[in-house]
Image 1: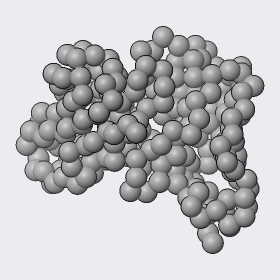
Image 2: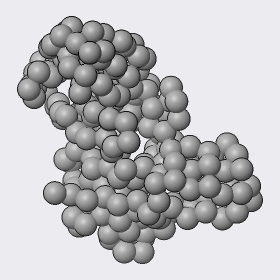
Image 3: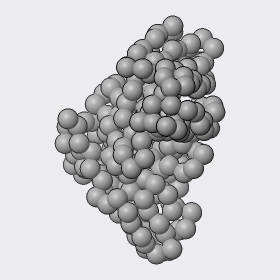
Image 4: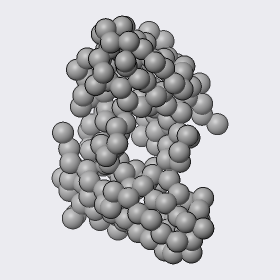
Length: 111
Length: 113
């Protein structure tokens, strides 16, 4: 069974902090994704990566960056956290054209 | 940004009721339509991936249909049970979009015992 692991279920940070959200998958999937989920807005794509060191902007990349140094790990970085980045963050991986496999999510609060 | 809409936004039904909800998506450059089920405190899990116009998929009491020409998909649940309570997400996959999905806002289903 595919396992996508996000480093924290809940995280509280302060405005202006640099925040790292980590995601690891154990199935050698090429594609990895970061989404945020807000009430009534569904899942919105922040960034995705289709290979090591490759990244593409999604629909809402502003205020975020990503890093993929190894195939199994995809990190989301909030360069200077702001209160409007309080949200649920979901990581997913996908082997080619099959369905996505999701992590359990990180509920991030920025105070 | 692609427009993928789901309706209704939420739905309350009694145990044993059958229900259905809708996902509408762009009818051009269609590649696939995904349905996911997301229970509270769990991760979303894939229900169906549909690629052909007229496709029908079934998993237990849940089924889905696809109309790519008019840009909609229906998800049906026959005889809802409390354990069917979840948010149901559809996601549109555009042709040649590098494996990206565009999600709708979801339909939150609550089934009362």
